[in-house]
Amino acid sequence: MKILFIQTGGTIDKDYPQKSGYAFEIREPAATRILEKIKPDFEFESVSLMKKDSTDIDDKDREKLFQYCKKSKYENIILTHGTDTMVDTASKLSAIKDKKIILTGAFHPERFQNSDADFNIGTAIGAINTAKPGIYIAMNGRVFEWDKCKRDSGNRFVDK
Image (tube, rainbow, N blue to C red):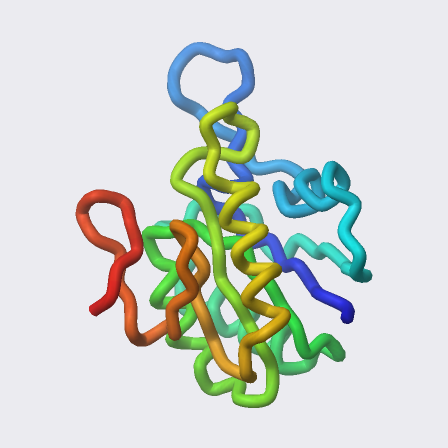
């Protein structure tokens, strides 16, 4: 099995350099750092398509992501994305019917000790092994069909 990991940015990839204030930077993909630690028993490629907070991802960015996934040789894609607009991006990707695409992210940056990033990436990897082609969201230890979940006010993904 081969998995393509696509970075779009979001909290999972945020790093807060030692500066005053709350400025953040998005650097290399968190998924790559996680995979290097666990040394998985599958092949993977990691690409960075954008490094944006999800509130800054617009329709032009979603179209770019759609075209990239549609044309990709990979059938198994895990996309790291900010949680604020994850469902919007999943909706755009839903026209792709012949691939398994799982969106995941984190409510705390991967760089933080209390991050949920490792857990969510692991959930997405487990899901891609058994999922049928379609678009999914893997968060909080659950895997949802993209159109059957929502982000609630408590920063969790729940059933619609």
